[in-house]
Length: 461
Image (cartoon, rainbow, N blue to C red; front, side, top):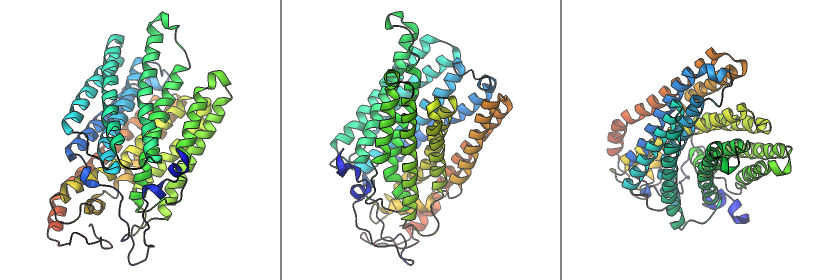
């Protein structure tokens, strides 16, 4: 990657911004994205809505399987079905929608044609549906068929978005390489899953290799989800804070995460103690990334208090710090906390990305520069939702993990109830934002602003 690639926002944002002043807070900030390249709003909203449906189904599944979870029956077919409902149904579906929106805007390339994205989504939903149905019904044939179709959809998705990234004139920096690594991790995850399936059912492969399961989990949670969060938030966190990370070595966290993954993969050959070094690298990556979030907050040019979305962001990183600290023991708690942290990141980011999608749809019908959508979105964002959803999410984590640890199924069911409540709060807050869209659009439509006018302090534009 080189030193230039590690300089992060110095190259990512690259602009010399005026100092923050009491009377002009936020006025000098201008996001370095091209909102004109964004895909239709319905595409991103559709992926998000599908993810919410999957997440609600996860809550139902956790409640129904609370006894199995409390008894530590993690290999039960139904439990594996719930796990994949979360990782494939909620996490991966939602992250696909995010990348369809985020890559064109950040890398300044035309969006993937909507009809191709919709077809890929249809293949994906069919594959995941059959795959999960196979786990719940105990049908190995359905698991194999659904997994094959889902893998095809993942390959198609990777080709569609990586082709856009390859065409970008944007310099190959930390964001580019980290997101690219996440796409490799996404496909390596299903390859390892296929290897496990073959080892279970094909004696010629040599029998089941116990290490394949933890490597499959590490690849999914670090190689795919972890790298994607580390790459995407290098753009999102400074935008949320209206700040710059100029001069920060932003390549540190993904480098440490990659080192940890490499050490973890070499554990069968280098010995069990290698797992502790891998855990240390992951812990360093999480703490470093959390420090970058706090640095962005301290450099914020936004008027008033820090954006409440950072409650969810910081909470997500604290869950990942805890997961990294526990990962040396390769216990269920490390996996559960890593999954929970990923889910909280998604809920927080959606509370800001989806208002931007709606704001962009409004701004395209109004006069003025396209960048006004960024400032309009800040007026549409549900302020109270991220802290409230984060509190319910953390209550869910506490309920489920304490129930599993103590063997109390009722605590697991209580955690599932908190999960459903978090979904309701998240969806209702965003629905309320969409309902307020008409009044906001009318109010902004009555204003006059010249195309070159800079946003005024406290203004939505």
